[in-house]
Length: 279
Ligand SMILES: N[C@@H](CCC[C@H](N)C(=O)O)C(=O)O
Image: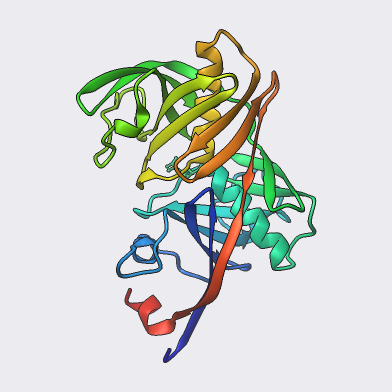
């Protein structure tokens, strides 16, 4: 390596993978092009998204309800777009804070564009995130692999269309974006395909806004659980969600929701300064 550029860490939550960029005082210029290059699996490090670690006080457009002293997860999708929330990202972000000494293990708060998310890190590598209230805002449908599937529109801080059916989700072609109603989802949507497996278990695949198919989506698993519970005539309850990248547990209560799953840090290093200037 010729010149030392910004530090990075690579991590994942159930194989939803991220480049973590520590930028405590907000000195990095995180352009869309740099995000796209970092996430590119051929010309960059490769990831579904970027998690910039920044003090809330250093982020000019941070939401007013996030305390200035909280760590803020500045999340970007692989295409460079900004999203309000990322459930797997929060788990990986919290693991990074603890491993790097920026936070104590146990209870901590993470600021996001969807508001503050209370988090608990566990000794076994799992992390539990309080994901907030799940809001239903309509019914819709999508078409994928020539099949039309009904779904419910759900806000978990970011928008989702969760489609519960008996269709074999493994057989769906998610190489192109499933169709969606642009009037109901003017900012785009994450689409979940959910098959109940019996008991409290479901299988899910997801096509994420700004990324494509990913091996897991934390907010998506919460939306999938809420939709699966509704399909079973329940407002609250728990589901074990199997995604291609592993398994997470979700609980919906009358006042909120929790997501529990693993968070893994894989490697760290420094970007080449010249690459960073002209990625
Ligand atoms: N993978 C994330 C969701 C990331 C944001 C999403 N693609 C969007 O644009 O809303 C998760 O784990 O929740």
